[in-house]
Image 1 (cartoon, rainbow, N blue to C red):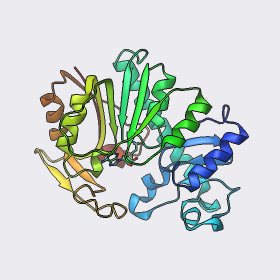
Image 2: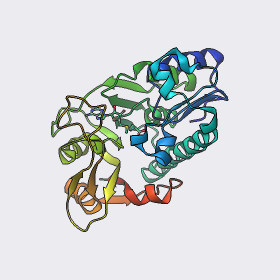
Image 3: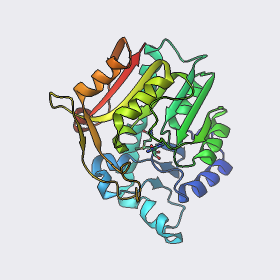
Length: 278
Ligand SMILES: C[S@@+](CC[C@H](N)C(=O)[O-])C[C@H]1O[C@@H](n2cnc3c(N)ncnc32)[C@H](O)[C@@H]1O
């Protein structure tokens, strides 16, 4: 999200502090020519490589261990900027496709589960959603506060850790789950929860395998998710057939596969983006 024309110098200073606390890391936000964060490099280098997520030449990598690993080195800067622009273009394309297919989000209530720093809640609030809420197990409240201030939006945030329930206690018109099932040991339970929360539409983006069966695969353990078994996986994949079946079983009469352009051909081949509409 390119916020260079609306972020002040004071906003950028606050963003730098949040970034050094790990609260601006994964999603692509550009607040100035000298501040850009995002996990774009992990798309080309791989998540196991742990590439840096914050481009900010004015910050000293010597200030902390985190800064040393998170700050982009000059030699990587061009690739960092390019891959995060691609990630931002992908997010914006998904938001545009959902908006078109649902007939517009003005007046809708939106919930993004596993929202991270709030790219989707802020974007849907900007697009006119009457309520736009993000849940995440990590407390990104200060990041959303800052983004709301910059964008003039009213996205809400709640710290929330999925506890295995099958049914949600509240419903929203549109529910999103972007790159979250990948971490869960029981993705079908979580899908059922998401489906029960979605009054009209559910969007799920997740890595999928293409075997012609109904299967779930657990690939690697996330090295950061300590003492969280069984919710500790970094790459849990569903077969495409299983994800389609799940949408059908949850009662979505129309299921549309969204374009994952402009991500790399390999990434597109290994991910599925489905929008179910009741
Ligand atoms: C790979 S990131 C994706 C973030 C965001 N949805 C996106 O695609 O830009 C996964 C996010 O889900 C959150 N998350 C993972 N497991 C969760 C759980 N069990 N309950 C709540 N949030 C969770 C993580 O904290 C993280 O912010």
